[in-house]
Length: 292
Image (cartoon, rainbow, N blue to C red):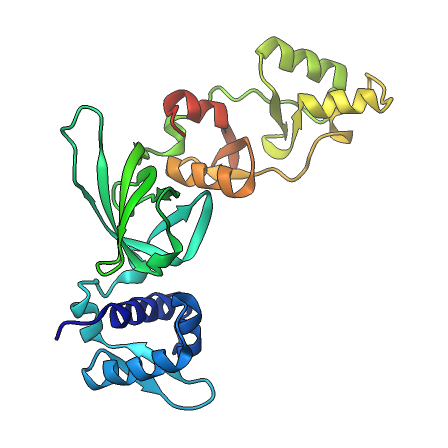
């Protein structure tokens, strides 16, 4: 049976919400997302139930959930939660949309690289002219940026003109970290610490005591301390930040990139067996991957 446009809209949204919340979805929630009358959605859901694409759960906490046949009808794999690919619109994450397929429609053209992006969720979130970012994809960590120049609501797909494509590296953090690790000690004076940072041409360093990481001190911390009237002979331990963000050296580089963006940080201490062994900064990453 050929589904109508509204039936596809309802079914795709049902699948998206069901995998997002893992409980039956109410018709009103679907109606709000696809901007349709709740009564219209309920009527269409009855049809989808009759043809075996949806099922209902009665009761106050009830609603609808997709059947296995629904995935087959829309060519969506059942392991959706394991292979979801995120999409951002104009810099903001789209919670009600994910990417199920990417197909490049032009690769050999000298000036153009277009891609067809198939969406699971609310296609009406996107408009021509929107800037979108897709990824990273699960297998090859492909990150795609581009501009929407067309969309097909019946096929739930976007046409984008790509501006950037980056395959994030699968190598571990230890392959990119700066070594040997330059460290400070808690009983150093601020004057000596500032001299060390200037000589090594770095903006900050971890503070280590008996091989254990206990803090981090930035040049800006020293400058602010002096501006506040603190003596040059004050100790590093009195100014250092004790909350240090660390990552194991065997983690993949793309995990660090994600943390940099999510936590708004510019550097991270790399550890092996709980001991600090290196440091990775945003500048280190940009030198290797300028498009990031």
